[in-house]
Image 1 (cartoon, helix red, strand yellow):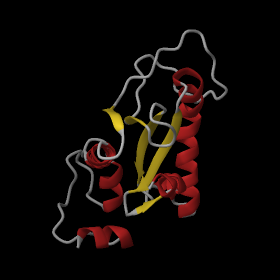
Image 2 (cartoon, one colour):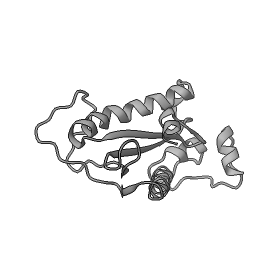
Image 3 (tube, helix red, strand yellow):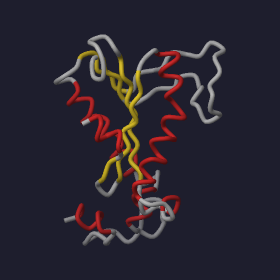
Image 4 (cartoon, one colour):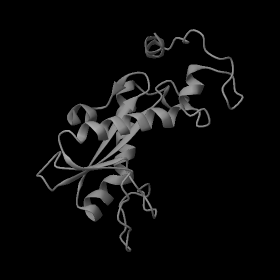
Length: 168
């Protein structure tokens, strides 16, 4: 019942009046509030389910693998993640290519009802979030890790982006 309510933007029955952060409880707030924990819980659950399923068909599946450190390389996008200790959600060998080709996956679950997404169509929201992930990691994965990168973008209300369709 809760999932049906969330899908249509209705308040789920029997919910609290206030979030743990003290703000008024609303579906929009709870899906985005970092203190309430829902964003990280849903992200980690999808990451873990994906990694678990990949162990059935691929090998060398790692959760939150560290990326190799940069040694002076420059990235084309200023939003590229160049930080030390950068990591992605899952790495796996043998998914897109040969047995030894590594693929990195990164999950993003967004709230389509958030104010940052209100003025954008849902299909464009998926593209926007996929492109943000690609700008942050794709060049580093391709040039430094010599691997492929797949962003897995999903909606908190039950939808997914084009790369998820390709991945499935």
